[in-house]
Length: 159
Figure (cartoon, one colour):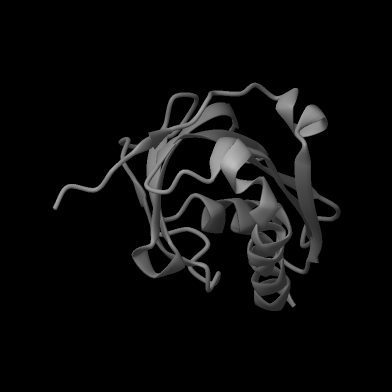
């Protein structure tokens, strides 16, 4: 049986300030910024997050604006196709969801910012911004709790 797809609306960087729902994790990492960036752009990035079973890059390297990837989440219950609209190599990347296999979000975007604090440490700030579809608004508290596990797992990974 063919899986249904639900289109999401594209966003720009301003969405991270005006989104109805915004979650953010900030992590002080005892690793160089280049090492953290390499991990975030490796094959199957964020593998330490329980919510994500795998992430596949669907664009060839080198990555940049326009790069796409597919995330498999919640034990395959949700597959998400993403497009990067901002890419500052070694520092920052942001994507929005193109489409998903569940109709939860009208718009969803993520921003990853890696900033060196010394030669051997950095700060990683991960922002998730979204607007739920009308029918999914009642699930917002649950969605926030589920999405926050990404930050919990990342904090454990970098501690």
